[in-house]
Length: 148
Image (cartoon, rainbow, N blue to C red; front, side):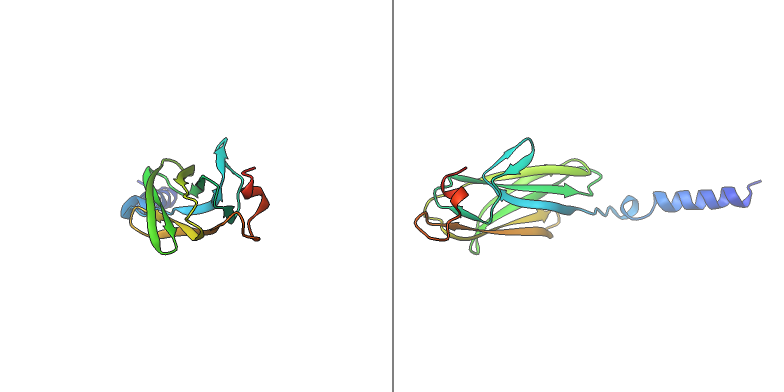
């Protein structure tokens, strides 16, 4: 015969097993960090800024994602103004996952950009805006003009 303790324990155990993501397949993805950078070294963004020179050559969108228990994918969607320029699907395989994509930047693509991080089901998890400026513009960031 089961005592009250055993019954309460079993009820709590089954509630835990069949709650939230176990039953409904819910995931709680959270973008902890998103950065536009000149490179990625040792799984960290390097040369992070919101303004880059038109001579930058290539940029990286670095994303740190937390909360995923099982493998999934996210997409990084690059926009120049409102024009979709690229979509890169990236695997997420752990609770804390760092991943990135890169985009070759043409000199004539000056102006406003953004990258949306999008879940498998199409939800925008986070966006990052940045700007590409002509190297002769006075607002060009010094560190991005020389690619340091």
